[in-house]
Length: 387
Image 1: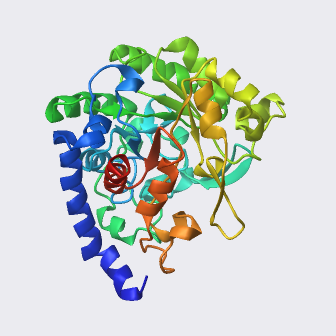
Image 2: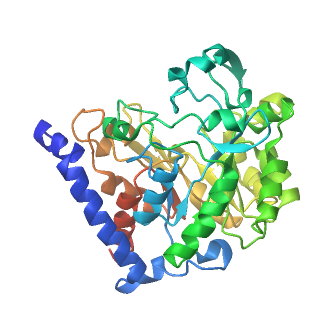
């Protein structure tokens, strides 16, 4: 893609895409011809089976267009047609509240560095084996965090998002649960959310166990049932196993690269890697306490050294055999995040061909996908199911 086209994608072209996507999303809600109508039907009740397939999951909201994990991002994801909003990544405050941040370190996602009163809170901690310097939610009370405002996490790729820096505060999980009910009433259809327990072993060691806090709030709001519109996820299988004893919600185990080990496995001395978890034996074990997998897209189709797509694995078929759904992550429109086959130009914030990438991944039989650009995903699904 040439420079001019990249500039149009980043400005007028991007707005045109957004506008078209809103119309497309509205069409999906109102009813489309043939299989598209079937794919978009059944938003109310019925648990996981009521969701359209492939399900479009707004990754941290509409984080391609707004700073992630804000109500601005969550609302826009719904406006653009997301079937589920990933609201949010859950981390605790010093006084035990759950808030929505991508990581407990908030220097990159809030304006905390601009607050001189919190300068002395900057510190270095070891987070899941990685030395990390910054400000951490567990060192702040909720009242203190509420004085901060969200900023764009990856400004080099999303400079257009930085105009919204400082507009929204950090949401709590309880606020998200109330928002879910408000939006369900307002929009006339059930809104789904997909929270994640972040670094649960780390926080349990600090006396800030996540699962019990999540379960308590879900019970308070009557959202802890098997058919509740709340799917819970974690990169630590033991967190999902713990949640399985506390709530009846649909549960999903997140999987990183095949060679990695979940951090709870590292702490427990379990030598298994993700590669072991995606064997037929590993999948049967997961199916004993979870309903789905959230694998990285590279576990669905491997990549060559140059970043282009290589071979489709058997993970989709193997997981389906034991009754597990698959919601891989993460589709983004910008070139650096796309497989090399679908990049156009070299601009860090330039769009490639996400529609081609969506089509390729949908063809593997996945049940849904996380995306920062829900509008693109909705239109890609419309093309796929009508194709």
